[in-house]
Length: 160
Length: 296
Image (cartoon, rainbow over all chains, first blue to last red; front, side, top):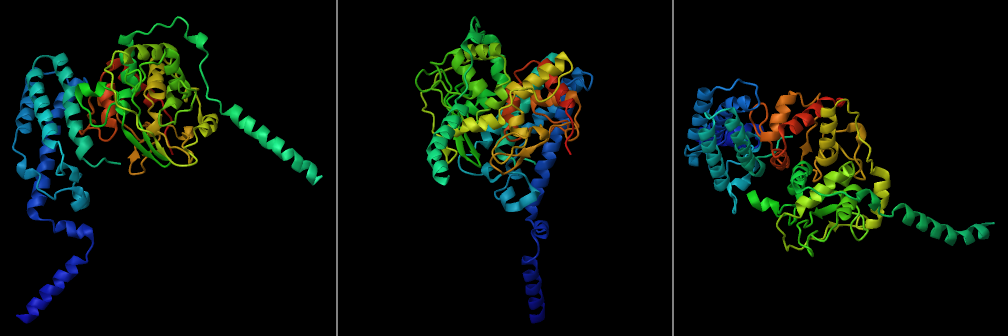
């Protein structure tokens, strides 16, 4: 029994001096799952915006029905409850490369909720606009992009 | 002999100082060139968005309509110290409400204040020097329609010797280059060049600088470290930015990349401005970028 404890302690100590890259794989599973899920959420935004943006830049032929469906998806996605996706400490200063989320999201004075609401509103406006003709869709895509940029400028680590 | 040379030294020193003084006189526009120019505020609004005035002169973190109050205050950390964007709202005392078209032209084309002092090149007059006088007159008319702010401009926090403004005359002698950087071969590319090289001042961030802060025109738009040294502004030459012209124009209008990610950093503000321009202008910028030679 004593031997087992010693062996375990040795293993534990070995673990603490390994590289940060390995430490990441020991991330709190709940935090790891939340990061995975929120990235997936962003992918779903991008997948639906991709159709709308493609139509807006004349790369995909305009189709009112398909545009409406994508915009309805986006509006529904924007309203999902996200409270479990953003646990305290799931920022890039704590976790490094695993996330681009800046600690400012959780800091005092953060306006992440207001910026998130701006996205919900821009998505709702797109849902109204998307089926109403290409010009109507084109007019809604800029404000939608601006609402995405609002959060990403303030709260995401810029890429090089 | 030595005594003779020594006796000349004071003369040489005075002559040298006089030469320095003469070489570093802040430049001004010949006011005859402004005769008869009437500003159109509606056209001026387009110049305002193309020149990105609000990106730096709106109060930091301001949103929506508040971005039209050009109270200043944004900080620009650099290797030479920290610069603060001044109040350029129409307030006659704290802003630039008392400026004439000639004052604005001297500021934008020569980096010279109404009092005849040099501005620091954090204000991108090296690019605005290529702007058309009519556009400056129109911009002047538009700026006058914006709300006034009583905010006092914050003094720059710049260390010796960069705090000697007269020395900027030497900087301008070395690094001012009002000529176009590239050849333009069609009306669309000429328009794109005007938007990129003059009003849009893209080169100020996307082109690397030498140790004295002058742009390295041999590496035009090939990407550069950010002024605060914390990140990089990407290359936008066709070898590095391989998006289609249509994708570039769409990005400038919406912020969406071809993968439907969005612009980050200061580019978010640039997109907010450019989104106000007609699609033809954004396509002209894209067409211009596609003509650039690649980097190494």
